[in-house]
Image (cartoon, rainbow, N blue to C red; front, side, top):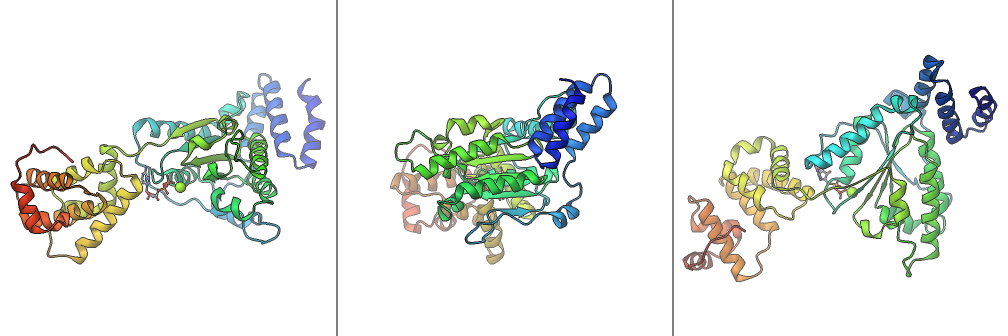
Length: 371
Ligand SMILES: Nc1ncnc2c1ncn2[C@@H]1O[C@H](COP(=O)(O)OP(=O)(O)O)[C@@H](O)[C@H]1O
Ligand SMILES: [Mg+2]
């Protein structure tokens, strides 16, 4: 079929406001005319790319009303205009994967001109507090597109029975916008279909979600996030072009997070304190590292008579537990070993262990290992 024969279909699809067919037909036309009419093919590609709005203010004014639950009239999604978000602090491999995703969006015209469907979805998994929601906001900022967030964990339970219809209207809305659709807590819906304890409703929802994901045009960007990748249906994984496990921050990232969040208070900390904290905050997620920095800053202000190092180490000890005597001995000895100018009173303050016990623990002869 040549390009001319596709025109009636394209016109019909336009009158029906059938975006998916319009996009598929436009791609087919580009493919057929690219060689002989490269300029026209380029124009069609551009029209496809910019088939939404092109400036943030106009976008917010022109936006359709948000989709609502038919009975309660509550909004089903949250809509946020892109606003500045600092780069996420991540290991190189994760950062590269995200950069590639953004680059593919920048090259969308080239993809379309080549007749290649550009990738439009990414699934983020990882423990709580590693930055999945933050990354979704950052992508929205980098692409200068509004963020439509659907928190499945809260919406599923409140709209059970009408969730299928709600999900359809959310996707319909997302398709009509040039936006990033963020499906947070995806596991709340995407339970494995072979799970015997599964409710029929959840199974139906998975199918609705699969169909909707399938029919999303490439101009609509979808980010999924889950803390429980093992609960996700394999078919859902397959619907995403990319998947990325966001790792817990390692020592290097923990240090970068502290430098960013302690801000000017960094200069009030000794290098050794910063290095000690970054090294020993093992298994502490990025969100908690940020929270710890806020606590340190607040306590430094509240206790100007104390050194920031003392405050920082004490705040760190509050989130690290030393349940056994061995662990208490170890932290006292480690602190003494790493910071020779700490008095026993300082160590008692930092660890919240009574001074007499600190004194006893420090007199015990053991080999000091890092905590
Ligand atoms: N990788 C990161 N880089 C920078 N800040 C981060 C990162 N991860 C988490 N944060 C901080 O912690 C907060 C909470 O993280 P969040 O994105 O809600 O985690 P998740 O969605 O994975 O549970 C963020 O708003 C941000 O301030
Ligand atoms: Mg989150």
